[in-house]
Every structure is written in C-alpha cells, then in structure tokens.
Length: 267
Ligand code: ADP
Image (cartoon, rainbow, N blue to C red; front, side):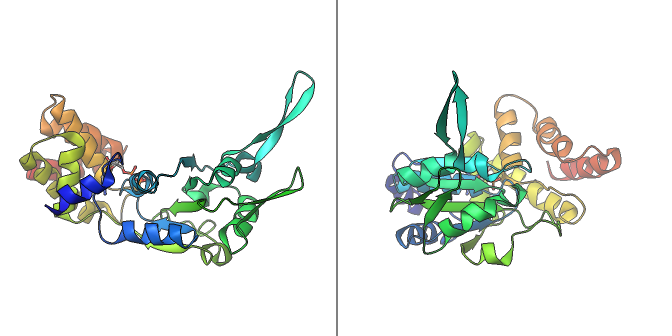
C-alpha cells in the first residue's frame, strides 16, 4: 500500500525504494538552498536517488562522473577556438548554476584539487560561481542545488574530502538497503520472481560478510540486479551470479573460487 502511494507521488520519476528518510532530507536541503553530500558504497543507490529526486522536484539534472584528470575548467568552461575566433563555452557546472538545475558530481574526491576552489563559494551562503577566465561572478539561480557523492570505503589517505569542503554540505549516509527493500529493488529492476530476488539478496548478504574487508568492492545492489536481469534473459541463476557477481568482483582465482563456493551454497 505504502509502495503504491509512493509511486503515485513519483509520477514520471525513476523507481527509487527509500532506505529511510533520505527523500525528505533531500527535499528539505533543496528547499533550504543547502548542498548535499551523499556517502555510501558503490552501487547502493546514490545516483538513482539523485535521478529520482531531480524528477520529483522537477529540476533538470546535470551529472558529472569525476575522475583524476577532471579540472576546474572542465566543470566551469573554457574558451574554444572556432574558425579563428574564440568563443566561451559553459561547462556542466556553469550550465547548472545558470539553469537552476541539480548538479551531481559523482565520486568528487577523484577530481583535481583545483575544483574545490570553484565549489567553495558555490557551496556556502554566497552561492556564487567565480568564472576566473571571464572575470564573471555568477549568482546561482534559486533552484540550483549542488550534490556530491563519495565512497568512504575507498580508503585513501591522500584523498578524502578536506574538512573545509565537507563542512559546507549536509551529509546523507546510504548503505546497501535492508533485505526486504533490496528484494523489492532486485524484483522491480529486473522483473524476476520474488523467490529469485530473495535468493539473490541472501547471496548478497553472504558475500558481503566475506568480502567487505578483503575486496575493494563487494556484491552491491547493482550487481544483484545485473545477475537477476541475466537470469530473466534466460541464463541459469548460478551462471548469472558467476558472470555478474563473482567474475565482476575479482580477477584472483582463489578469491573467485571462494566466492563461487558461496554461490553454490546459497543458489
Ligand atoms: P551508486 O550511484 O551508489 O553507485 P546506483 O544508484 O547507480 O548506485 O545504483 C545501481 C543500480 O542499483 C541502479 O541502477 C538500480 O538498478 C539499483 N538500485 C540500487 N538502489 C536502489 C534503490 N534504492 N531503488 C531503486 N533501485 C536501486
């Protein structure tokens, strides 16, 4: 019943099964003009939450997957030379600031350090984006919202967010959803049977107990959904788990054998 009413409310928004109060927190942060930091392991629903909320709030969404070569100019924009003339071209962050969009910077700790220079004045009360190359100081449109995510599990002492950066954001912690919710997600995202979804979720839990401390990645909700989809497409469930989960998680033969044992035990 609750699910039905939640869906009716979502309208066109992509399906998102909430783990707790995160949708309300997102809405309140948006209404309060506060930037949001979403923490959580890979594949636990961070991106889907942002997509869902952007649709619910009826805001355009600009997503940037950050990588170690991403610079402030990639976000803000640059002059392009076209037929001998130079023309300014807004980057994705500048476009979002002008349009009042939600700008989602996925895995922000990966980006080059000069990006924090542009994020700071945007993330605090000023809500301004300095465009150094043109000398412009752009005021963010009222509905603009900055959302960043990072995975605290990638322990890297050199990385992590500086306290001066993270203190500007409201923080939201996500983890893998609890079993009832994860079963609903796997079922809805793949159209597999309730029984298959429940079995995959059980496998996910068993694998997480084993791998969380040994592998950089573990069996995420995303991987469970992928296994379920392969199965719905006609692959046997064990083979689907091998391809979508075990071989996706490790290259090491011994680890793969250990994970494979768990698949045989649970599936
Ligand atoms: P992240 O951004 O945390 O790496 P995603 O949001 O991309 O993870 O989630 C990966 C996939 O898992 C999604 O495409 C979706 O199929 C599924 N998923 C995970 N959590 C949820 C959720 N709460 N509701 C709906 N689908 C989810």
